Image (cartoon, rainbow, N blue to C red; front, top):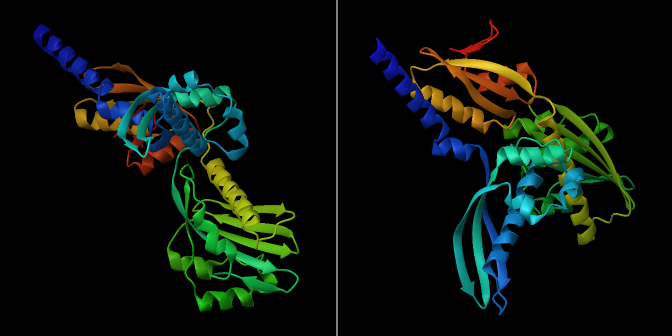
Length: 353
């Protein structure tokens, strides 16, 4: 009996070691930013370390800009290099070369997820989950003076929209193909276009997300009504811009940049993580299947809404996890269901079945 007990303790300890020191688990607790490219002149006072430091800064801002809304950008501008380095777990030089008296380097940087969230919480910033998503985007320019519309290739916003994408942006835009039937349909609806839902057009693209922007132009004043749809939300945005000439490339780029920021911020708001809410949840899982337990930990590491977790205790039947969740209990249950985890919530300690 004593031998069996010792054997049980040995294998339980071994299982915990595998859990805590799994390479995959460590990796999934990090934010990975790859293909950071820096180029600097190779001069007498050239310092490779300074170039790497520039790469760290560039990687940090690329990461954080994908996590936070545009009004919060200025809150992080004063961060120091040492503070950034304190949040880095690892980095790697993917490629380096000297060409025409210039040094080029390609970096991959791994940031500690918990430290990033703690830094943003200190700055009173609620981050969002990094969820890349594709949206159908239909921009329609309506000239209120002449009551005319521009939709496809004669629409400068349509033509230039995907020329100004940035790496930190989460939304990938699909522009509609030129379709005479769609043009005719929209033109027929011009008088009540603000109340039209565009389902006849959007359903052809089989996307659950879409943005319809009605861009009303009156001389150099621009009013934009945007309808943002995803599978759970319908959001209406009204924005106005003055002294905008869409035939001027600089003004056009300004308008597109601001519109993209509005859409990005809306998407981030939908997927916001309220780090001030930490709901404790205790879940137990049978310990007779090491792979199942390991996969569960990988799942916990990948969910940004999970602030932290630890193994509370274990016995010969179960491993007990204490989880801190940034959201409602029902939200946690929904995430578990989406990941095909069947939870029994009848008792205080929930069981994965």
